[in-house]
Image (cartoon, rainbow, N blue to C red; front, side):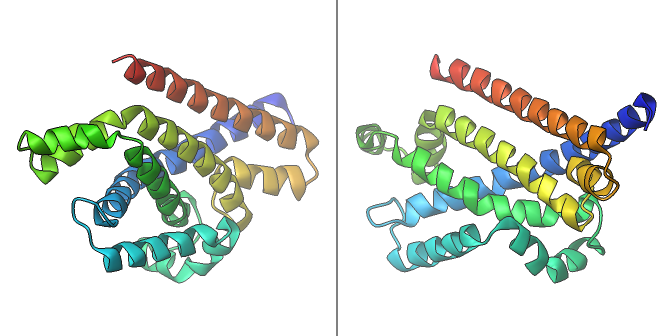
Length: 218
């Protein structure tokens, strides 16, 4: 395989991976944030304490997190087909990626919010802040560095998940590594794919660390 052919394949793989990870990250950030906030609010002693609801949510999250992604990928095939009309390609891969990442990020959100000092919440309550104000202007604001750090970890996990999606034709760098590097014994393709994935993850980690440092100084 010539360098021009390899570079073209890598460019396509990177675009597909970036698309899958990017869309999944947005959906995961929204869904995981909402779920994580609910876990904190409905926990015993929370602002909306509801032990039964908290237990159900916690059970659902734990079940979803306990499934290896490759099994989840296959298990949600009917749902993926119902949502996007196909089970092959980058758009189809976004569905299991999001389903797998939301519970993961929700637990990170929960942990970050629990790190907010109770005195801060108590002070806001004493000043007459509403529940929505406490969540938006106290909990989420104080937990921003932890939330960004957690989202960075989640994005990196999504990169790994997206590579696994290549096993079932999900596209991206994982698909490239399977089809060319493994099935066709193109060693240079496998090496190039590994290097591209490492570089992708390093860029994500560097960007996340930079944003965390800026938020921590504010």
